[in-house]
Image (cartoon, rainbow, N blue to C red; front, side, top):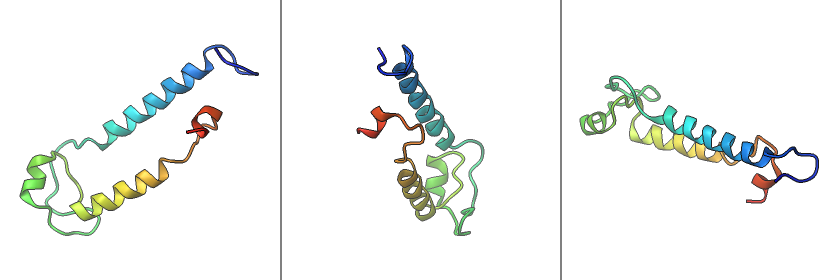
Length: 88
């Protein structure tokens, strides 16, 4: 039940879109293919244990942690402009 100028089902569509975005983001982070021997960011060698544990790994631990921190910072922005998501 939507209020104001929103049509019925608009809130559920917002929730569905948020879930789809989260799934898409999670799938994009799953490694695929063969792991690199050296980090694509800094060029340091990636330990064998990391390459075996995470298929398709492309970064060393330090570079991956930096990327994760950056993505976490950027993900807190409300791009949809929904009042409900701004109240969190």
